[in-house]
Image (cartoon, rainbow, N blue to C red):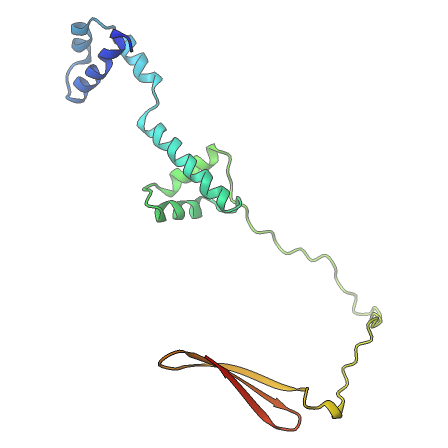
Length: 170
């Protein structure tokens, strides 16, 4: 750091205390234009904070597989304890060329012709009930009941012979 550059923090501190920058530069024998040029060359606090937030936004956006838009990214940042507005997140996402991906609309590709003949059953499925195996065919129902110690699931099966069997789990 040169002698001239070493004076700039002092001038900055004097400016924060509402003192005259011109007078401080005269006393330290530094030109005002050099002080302001040095100050302009450094990024502002807002630009530094924007760069920090842009990195976090990029991480969240990549973790979501590029699906999150500004509202969801903003929600994630707030959940992480980062104070920022939704509009700031939207501005930074636009600047970084990051967009949320909207879900695609369902596209109907085939409209069946009701007058067309039915397709042949190549597998040969048979939906007829064999009365010898009527035990296999039946109705079933399930329900959940609360118990003081656990949720209990009950499954009821009624077959063609009207026999009801039950099973439960805890």
